[in-house]
Amino acid sequence: MTYGENMKAAGQIGSLYRSVKNAISAILVGDDGCGGISDEVGLTKITNPFSGKDPSYIESPYSYNSLTDFWDNIQSINNVWSGGVTGNRSDYSMAGYFKKYNPTIGKEVQTAIDDAQTKIKAIPTPFVLTFNVAANKETIQAAIDACKNLTDVLNKADDFVQSNNK
Image (cartoon, rainbow, N blue to C red; front, side, top):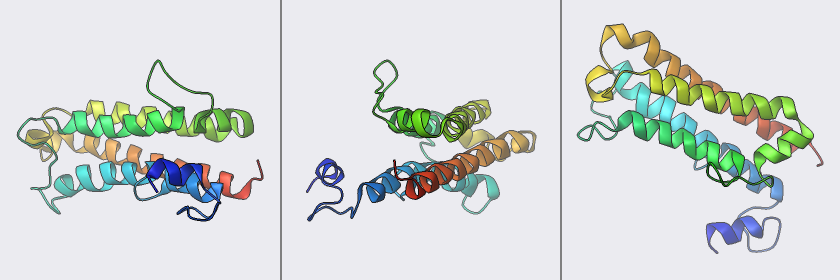
C-alpha cells in the first residue's frame, strides 16, 4: 500500500495505522511527520554545527541555501497543518479541525510555525559562514528554541486528538 492508501485505510485491515488517531499521530508527531521535521531542523540541522557537535553537518553548504532549506522544511509543516499550499488551502485540515474543536491549540501551533520561520529568517546568511560567529549566538539559539517549541505544541495538539472523541 502507498502512503496515501495507508492513510485512507487507517483503522482497516492491511493499513499500517490501527486507527485514524494513529494516522493523525503519524502526521503530527511521527519521525517522518511534522514533529520529526521540526526536531530535525532545530536539533540536528541547526544544533549540530552550532553546538560544535558536528560542524561539518551543514545542509547545502556549497549553494549557501541552508537557511532557505530550513525555512522550507518548516513551510512543509505549515502546508500539512493548513491542508495545502498557500493560495490553495483546505478547511479539511489540521488547522480546520482545531479551529472547530480547540482554537487555542490551533492558534498555538500556527503561531509556533510562524515564529520558527521568523527566527530562521533572522539568522545571518550564509549559515555555513555564520553558524560559529559569536555575535550570532543568540539569534541561532532563538531559532533552535522556536523549533523546539513547535515540536512541543505539535505534541500538545496530538495529545488533544488522542484524548478527544471528535
